[in-house]
Amino acid sequence: MANIALLFEFSGNNGIKNGPISEFCTTFATDLNKITMVVPQKVKSFMMPITMTLGVIFGITIPKVILSLSVMLPYLVAGMLLVAYSKLHFKNIRIVPMHFVLIITQMLGALIMWKLFSYWNPLYAQQAFICIFCPIATSSPVVIGMLGGNLTCVVAYILFFYIGASFLIPGILPIVTGNDTIPFLPMSLIIAKQVMPMILLPLLITMAMKLRFRRGIHFLRENQSLAFYLWSICLTLVIGKATIYVMAEPANRIPTELMLAAISLFTCLLQFGVGHLIGVHYHENVVGTQSLGQKNTAMGLWMTFAYFNPLVSVGMAAYSIFQNSINSLQIYLYASKNK
Image 1 (tube, rainbow, N blue to C red):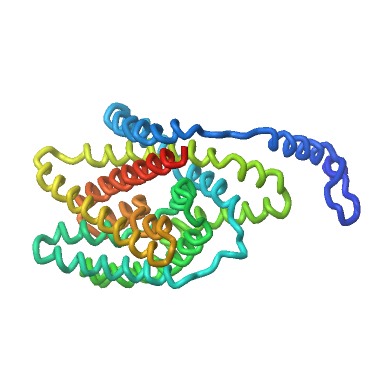
Image 2: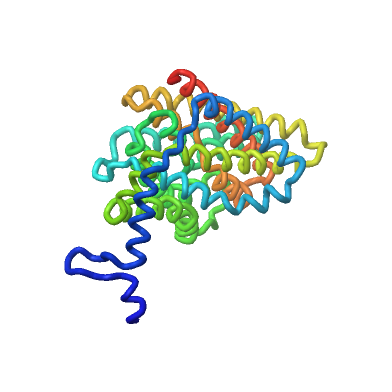
């Protein structure tokens, strides 16, 4: 213990001081302030289509590598959120009326679409339902930050949504699936376990850094381009996984797959459009658009395989491609506008 104590020299209320480790941290933090990573607007404009194309190519040519690397996705998302959260003012995080409108619109919209499509085909009804019912993407603050949106507003909505979703999802799914045996509490805990650590850990780390490592926070604030690079890697892996899901289905199902993809595209455009209208009404058009349109497709696929026809996963994978295509276009237009 004495040897460990020598590494950190304590002095009254000032805490760690003058020890080798603290000197290293001080030097490291000082060096951080000298680093600035900037992504040229031209690179931002063209990076998205390049990464999506690579995702498709890699998904076809090296699917095993893509699936192996996909285990990195939660950590990449956490890293992106850490960078995005560095710009937050935590005291401004609060629930606003728009959040209630968004979640009610999403839940009711999912049930209405399910009912309407059920008159046509039960499989298509499941597809329409899950594409709308699927929760907001935990990585949405990153895209919203790239588009100049209100990070505080979307972080508040994500926390509000997933706390509510832990109770709403187990309550609504039995209505659609007709399975009354879905356990309410275990499923609520599964949902909370899947997403809350990814949301809360970067938030808590950022809060701790603001208290004890301000130079680190300054580095993250000045280098928001880190999130762009991480998102580009994530995009390649996500598109690659989606391609693998689609390619895995037998050829005789292609007509059905195309119809599921068409329904997926319809619901994707619908949600981006309705979200934009809600956002414009509350003067948060970027947040509104992304809150309804950008989905946590990983959770959507999990719900699909657990409670729906597995074929619905094709449409969910297609939704991932569509939403990232729309966001890539939006980032391209935003970057071009702000050259």
